[in-house]
Image 1 (cartoon, rainbow, N blue to C red):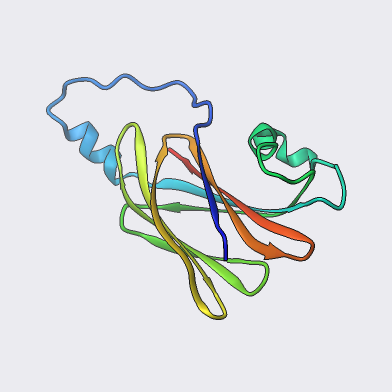
Image 2 (image 1 turned 60 degrees about the vertical axis):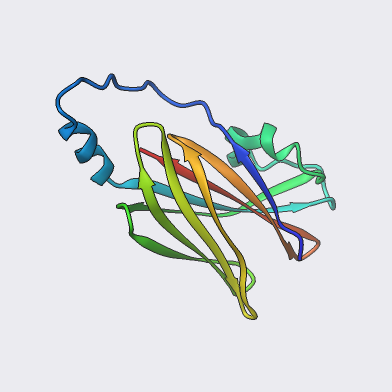
Length: 153
């Protein structure tokens, strides 16, 4: 099964200045949760419509070799470092997300996609603060399932 991972940098909001307070602020920030958002998108060539709810990431989806994109669902959870969440997705699959670490610039996130026959994907990515990356693959109906994963903090 082919998988495509696209590392994407989203436009981030203002960055707060970090003072030199001995590092306690940085340690506290590292313990703060990361909001993980998982979107499920069906990419297909059976139509040429872009779901209006995908406007924020439409230019990135346009790089895929599909003409139509439908948002199937959105899920969100706040995860502290070392915490794990299982997201159920279509096709009797699940996405397991673990926040391994985070600092003021990036979050390291482990992503596993599990299906009926076991683990389909197991990778660790670095997502820029308030950014996202896209995993495209497995087949779904007449196209593929595209999974944008956001890390906001």
